[in-house]
Image (cartoon, rainbow, N blue to C red; front, side):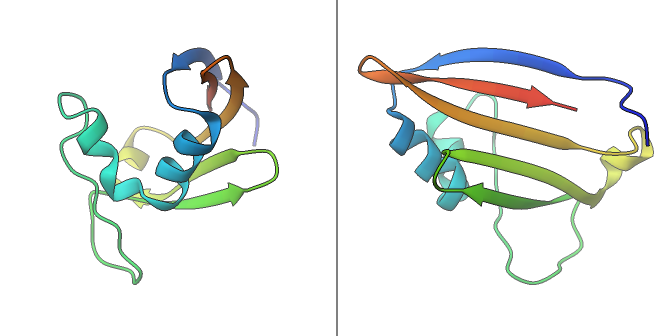
Length: 102
């Protein structure tokens, strides 16, 4: 399948690379606490449950990279695939998150 669209952004964060990676990698259900006006709810399920959007989280501890791969849901009525990569790069007291969406 050909890549039709790719978007990238660098976002500075006050959280360290380790804190950011740990939150998105292993505590995704706590994300609404950090950004309540943008994300209202995250439900983590261990078994397949019917949802509006379902994704798989792939973690790379060594490079502090989180990859979110869409599996099913209403989003696929508009897009053929959904992959978001969050690479955390330490910077000063915090870090920079390189966000790639394709």
